[in-house]
Image (cartoon, rainbow, N blue to C red; front, top):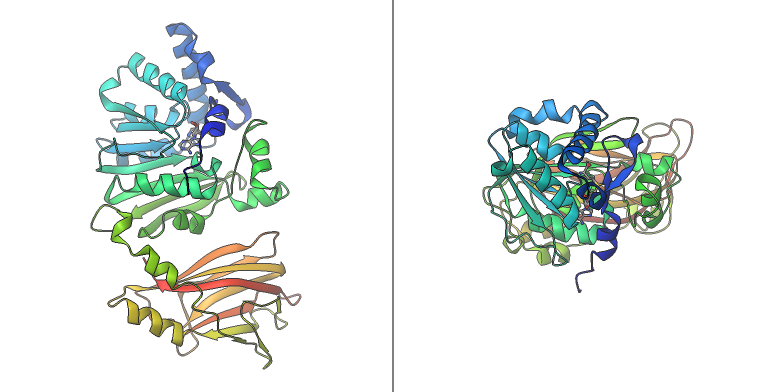
Length: 392
Ligand SMILES: C[S@@+](CC[C@H](N)C(=O)[O-])C[C@H]1O[C@@H](n2cnc3c(N)ncnc32)[C@H](O)[C@@H]1O
């Protein structure tokens, strides 16, 4: 597939956010037209709003983490975060698709005497970061690549990930699904206009599993994952948990995808009826926690372990739609006990949800089970697909 052009996104993002949600946006070209004093004062005023506002706490949280370290930022806008961390001793590489955004940051950092701590990379339509070193300690992604469709973001993110050290951090701010639901669950082409102004071509909600899928098959350990500001934002801080820098060719992605849909076995409902796992909606048994469906993972497990020896664990990727109520989808062991941290709850909603259940160092999952999470009624769910794979 040819790489899609970034032209529409470059055109929009010549207009970058001011310091706070409530302050709107400014064209970087207009800032560049100002004389030095006015330019510096305008930038400082916006940055001060940023540091005192909704996301200002990120500075004190990470100043020490980044001091003396090399960080690459994807989509810095006018550079509030990177400039602040560079002022606290970080070495910062700003990567953006808009030349004038980078020109604003170059000029600010020169005026502030930070030139020796900063670098710049203009992202071309090849979405490549080949020109950058491969030993970054962290990658900072602040509300940027959720503004391009998933496949573009994935290509870009995987390339940049190859420049992160083993044990390095992937940190990201996204818009949560809850915010998308609150705003009427519009198509992503429309949602950007609500979140970031009329000219915005795209905004897509993310949760940790979507970010992990974007970076799949890179092994990532979650340090932080939480929403803040009334569901307006979600923050992730993850460790790249591998011994070597990421290279897609080290992972047999083709083999992994050939294992897709290993779980297409029929499911046994608790009332004895048999339904097709990937078939129409299943009505849960009544009552909170009522077991409503289960599938034996044995045959799929044998296929996966046969293909890859010495696995650290397993993951099951599930696409599920809940038409009414809420369900818990979980992994249980041979005794029917839930494995630690291996149940996801999926609520009724307008879209399919992607969830991944992991069993790494916790025991072997024997069954995938679904239970009703609505005390007051019978939830209805539809499992679109389920895939068992080695965990990363
Ligand atoms: C909403 S602004 C956020 C700017 C800044 N991080 C902040 O918090 O103020 C989005 C930024 O991401 C950049 N951007 C948009 N799409 C991008 C992409 N595919 N890759 C890298 N940067 C992108 C834009 O040029 C812009 O600088």
